[in-house]
Image 1 (cartoon, rainbow, N blue to C red):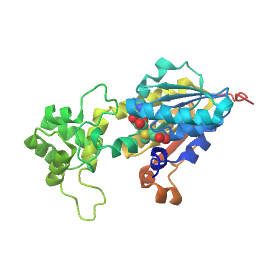
Image 2 (image 1 turned 135 degrees about the vertical axis):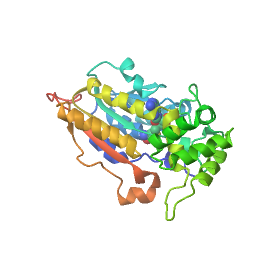
Image 3 (image 1 turned 180 degrees about the vertical axis):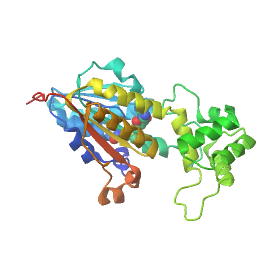
Image 4 (image 1 turned 120 degrees about the vertical axis):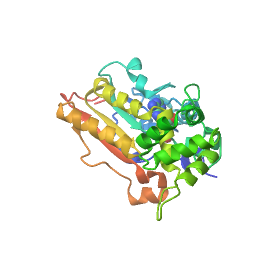
Length: 308
Ligand SMILES: C[S@@+](CC[C@H](N)C(=O)[O-])C[C@H]1O[C@@H](n2cnc3c(N)ncnc32)[C@H](O)[C@@H]1O
C-alpha cells in the first residue's frame, strides 16, 4: 500500500523548488506545510546552516508535517537544516519573522488532499461527514454554524461571491428551507436538488457552494491578501516568492498583487503567464489540473547568497 506522502504528491513540486532557487544556508518559509511535500524538497537543499520555517493552522497537518520532516532530517543527519514549525495562520507571519530576513517564501493555497479525503473534516461532498470545513479545528465557526445561522441573503451573497455560483439565490432559499443542515451529504443533496447539474457540466452541482463555504469559514482570501502584503517586507533583496493557487479567486489576488508590486518597483515578475502542470503530472495527479503557479523576485541589490 502507498504511504500517505506517496498518495498526496505535492503539486508543481519541481517547478516550485526551481523557482524558489533554494540556496544552502538560507532561511526559507513554507507558509502551507500540509504534508510537507514541498518542505521536504526545500530541507534537502538547505544544509546544516539553513533554516526552514513552516506554517500550518491545521493541528493534524502540522503533526504529520513534523513527522515527515523529522524523517527527512534524520536521513540528512549532519546535513539537516534547523526546522521551526508554527501552528498558526500564515497571516501571523510578521509576528514571527524579522523584516528582510527571508531568502524565499512558498505558499500552496487551499486545502490538502488529506483534509479533502477525510470525511470527518467535513470538506467534501464526495464523502458524508459532519459539516465542519475548518482548517484550524480549534477555533472559529463551522460550516454548519454558518449554514444554519446566516440569513438567506447572507448565504446567497457568500455563495455568489466565493463560489462564483450564478444560481446562489435559489440554493440559499433551499438551504434555509432544509435547516438544520448538519452533514456534507445533506448539504450536497439540497444544493443538487435546487441547482441540478447543467448538461455536459463537468463539475458536481455542489462544487461551487462547497468552495464558497470553505473560503468563508477559513477567511481564505483575507489570509492570502495579508500574506502578499507582508511578503515584500519579509524578503531580502533578490529573494523570491512562489505561490500556487487552485481557483480563479485566489489566482486573481496573486496576479493583481504581483502586478501592483511590479508597478511600484517592488517585484520583478518571473512568470508572465502562470505555470501549470505538464502532461505527466496531470496523469499522475488529477488534483494538479487547476493549479497555477506564479513567482516574483523582490527587487534590490543582489548580495552574494548565503553559503556562496
Ligand atoms: C494545499 S495544502 C499544502 C500541501 C503542501 N504544499 C505539501 O506539499 O504537502 C495547504 C495546507 O495549508 C494549510 N493552510 C491553508 N491556509 C492556511 C493559512 N491561512 N494559514 C496556515 N495554514 C494554511 C492547510 O491547512 C493545508 O494543510
